[in-house]
Amino acid sequence: MNNPSFAEQAGDRIAKYLARAGVCSRRDAEKLILEGRVRVDGKVLETPAVKVTGMEDIRVDEVRIAIAGPARLWRYHKPDNLVTTHKDPQGRTTVFEELPPALGRVISVGRLDLTTEGLLLLTNHGGLARHMELPATGWLRRYRVRAYGQISQKQLDGLAAGVTIDDIDYGPVKANLESTQGSNSWLTVAIREGKNREVRAIMRHLGLTVNRLIRTAYGPFQLGKLPKGAVEEIPAKTIREQLGQKISAEFGL
Image (cartoon, rainbow, N blue to C red):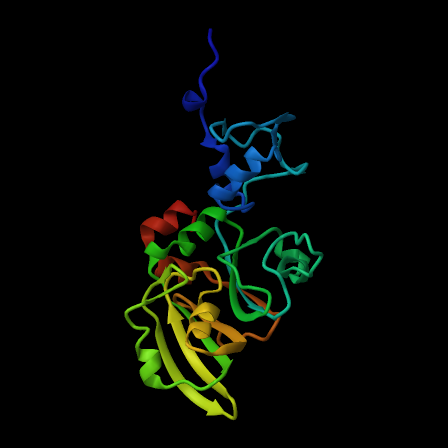
């Protein structure tokens, strides 16, 4: 009897399995496979089309991977000068090195750059992270911004229709001037897409230089009074209320 093709095998595609195990998103899992970093029963995978059931010896960079339980989500108050990556080629301290070991392996929902502080969501489930990152989710990312320079509310209102900077289109931005202290202005900024260094690029376009950036909310999840460096799990009930029944069921909530 011929062996079944990959499409006919039982189980999930390896990228989906790795995402469910909290290793990374499906997209990043496919990159790991193409880089030759994933083994199944001792064999280096060459294609993401392979399906697995979880009974196999599945390893990423020689670390055995097992399916995590139901998706979990944490709020983390990221300090500045931490990199949001599991391994930094420049040797800088990462977010994940500073987390309590008891948390286990988690990944971030999106990223905050080196000097950005505030709310960073963490999860044990790559699929959940990917879902929450999608612009289609429509969640606002809210920030407090301290920037060097002067700005008027009228100028900020001009961002409501979006702006194009260096051939990059940024969606509508809601920005308000909170106060002016000497040469610095404090603003609140809300965006939906969260493109790379988006807030800093927009402020620079307005002639402002950001010297402090704090994310205060990601969709319905708030930083609140969570102390800097602290981690707090979000109850499953709260996650279900925000994601809806269908999506929650997909992630085992």
